[in-house]
Image 1 (tube, rainbow, N blue to C red):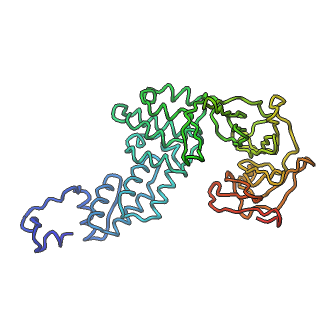
Image 2 (cartoon, rainbow, N blue to C red; image 1 turned 135 degrees about the vertical axis):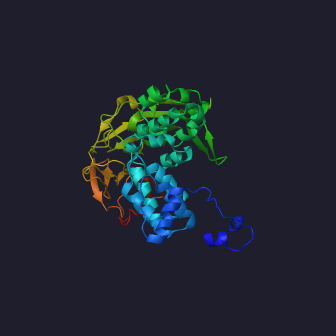
Image 3 (cartoon, one colour; image 1 turned 90 degrees about the vertical axis):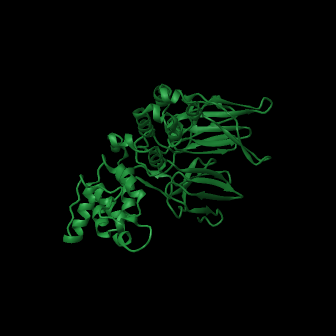
Length: 405
C-alpha cells in the first residue's frame, strides 16, 4: 500500500507531500495496525473494532483480519449479530465457514434478535433476505410478520413504500385468520397500500391445457377459510380441500357462468392437520395427520361419500403407525399411506402401509429407501412416484409387481 503510494509511479501526488491524508480510515485503526507492525501485538475491542477492520481490510493485513474474525466469534450476540452479518457479507476477508456460522446464528436466534433495536436500523434488502430464508427458526409466521411491522413503524414515512416488498417475504398462508383480521387489516401502513391488500386476498389459479398457461381466476375466499395444512383432490369439475385449517370445503366450477364457488362440507370427526388425502371411487379418504400444534400424530382414517356428502364422515380401520406429513395415493383400488413424520421420535419415517376397502384392514409393505415427510406423491400408469420432501431432494418409485421401491 505505502510502496505504491510513495513509489516513483506517476499519478500518486502523495509521494511529493510531507503530509498525507488517509481517506476513510479512522486514526484508531491506523494507529493500532501500524503499532502491530512494530511490536506484533494488537488489541481489538468494541471501541476500535470497526476502525481496525477497515484498515486491515484495505491494507490486506491477514493476521489482523483473522484476529477481527476471532473477535466477532467471541462477542457475537443477539444485539449485534445483524451488523456483523452485513459487514461479513460485504467483505471477502472473512472465511466461508464464519459466514455460515453467522447466518446460522441469525436464523436460529431470530425471535430473540427481533427484540433488540439493531433490527430496526438494518437496510430493507438485508431484512428481506433474512425473511426469505427457509432456515429461519420461528414458532409461528406471526413473529416474522410482527418483525416487518415493527421495522416499518420505526420510520413510517421513509419505509412505507417497502411494505409490500417485505410482505412478499412472509409466508402469508401460515398466518392465522385472527392475526390477519385483527393485526394486518387494522395496520395503517398495510391499509394504505393497495398492493399489500391484494397480497392478503386469497387467489386461485387454473392451468389451461389448451393455452398451456396459468390463469388467475381472482377467486376471493373469506379469511376464515384459509387453505393451509390440508390435502387437495379433484373429482370432475370440483376440487376438494380436506383437513388443516379449512377442515373440509369444495371449490365448484360453473362452466356456463365461468365462475368458481367455495362451499362447506361436513366437518371431519377429528382434526387432521397435514394429512394424506386421496379419492377412491366416489369416496374421499383423509388419512392420519396431527393436531394443530403438530405435537400429536394420530392414526384416524375417515371417508366421505361425495355423492351424498350430507351423510357425513365415517370412520374406517385406523393406521398401524401414527403419522402426519404423509402421502396418500390410490393404486389398484387400494390406498397407500406413505412415509410421514413420527411425533414421538421427532423424525421422518419410511414405513408404508396399504388399506384394503374390501377387508377394512391396513397391511405393512416394503418401506421407502429414504425416510421423508411433506413430499409429492402420484400414481402414474400403475407406478407410485414420491419426490422430494422436507430437506430431501431424491425421487423413488414403487413397483407393485416386485413390491420394491
